[in-house]
Length: 159
Image 1 (cartoon, rainbow, N blue to C red):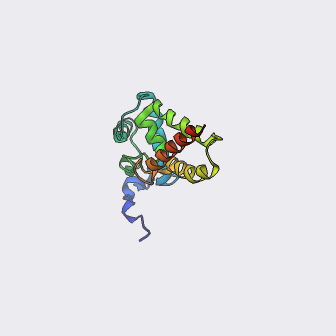
Image 2: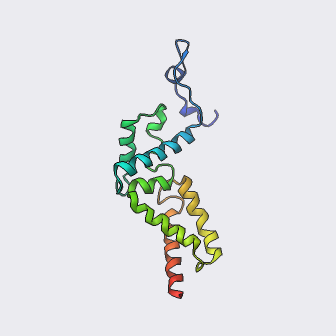
C-alpha cells in the first residue's frame, strides 16, 4: 500500500470509459486543493467583501462548489473547513478586514524597534502558517499572532 490507496477513484469515473479518456488530471491533489482555496478566496472577496464570519469558511467553500463543481470528487471535502492555508482562511472569513492583520504583520516585520532575534523566531511560523496552515488554533498560529501583538506593545512602550 503506497499510503494513498484510500484516495484512489474508480477508473470508470476518471479514466478510460469505452476506450475513451474522459478526464485527464495533471498535477497533484495537494496542488488542486491549494489552488481551489485561492479561487474560493478570490470568489469570496468579490461576493462578500466584509467576509463570511469567524469559522464559516465551509459556507464559502460550499457556495463556490455549487457554482464551480470540482472535476475530482475528493475536492468536495478536502480542506473544506480550513482552506489549506491561513492566508485564504483569513480573507474568506474576515474579508477586507484581514488586510489590517497583514499590514500589522508587515509593519512588525519592517519595524526597527523590534529585535531581529524576535522577528527571526516569530515570523517563520507566521509565514509557514499563512502558506500552508490548517486553521487559527493549529500549529501555534494564534499564539504567535498574540506574541507579535504583545511584543509590539512592549516595544512601543519603550519609545
